[in-house]
Length: 227
Image (tube, rainbow, N blue to C red; front, side):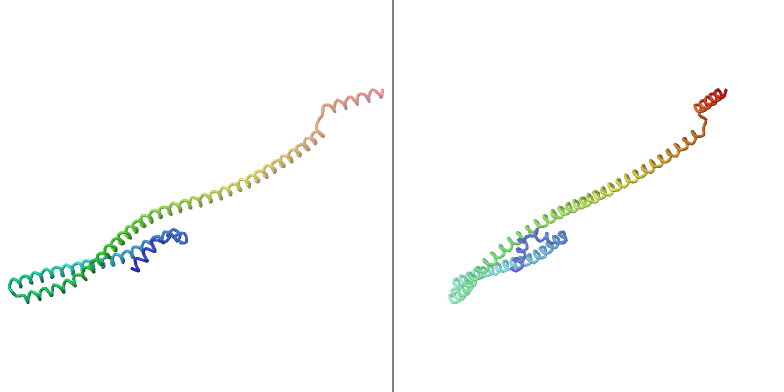
């Protein structure tokens, strides 16, 4: 019964707690199932042995019962034949078989009870194992969903990181554009200053109608004063 005890201990254990500590829960689930299937195979062999013992005990009891009936029949035949001494011998054998019959009947009852108990236990274990297999498939499906969500979360984190990089790139681009605008403004200011100097210089040496008229008027006034 040690196999049954170990099997039921495993069945009663907190598998979920063990899975929490497992590096690869999926592999651990499969290992649990393999262990239970191996134990169930051994339980099946023991159950078959107990059931075989039940049949053997029942057969021995049936044989003993048949022999008692046969001895009784021979005793009747001996009486009919007028051989009482032979009839007593058959009856004595019948009495011996009756004692054996009581023992065999008790053994048969015990074997039958054991076989019934083992069969019920085997059926229960088999049902529990089938339930575990079904739960294993469900757990595997849940783990696949968890892994998919984890992958999506990782991708989301990567996207957030990429967004941060894009934001930094945008800031850098703004700084570059600002520097370009600044340099272009300075160049524009330099060009404006240079043009103003040139305009002033051209005005200095250019023909100014107002100045010419004043010069002519000044020369005319000087000429009148000399008269």
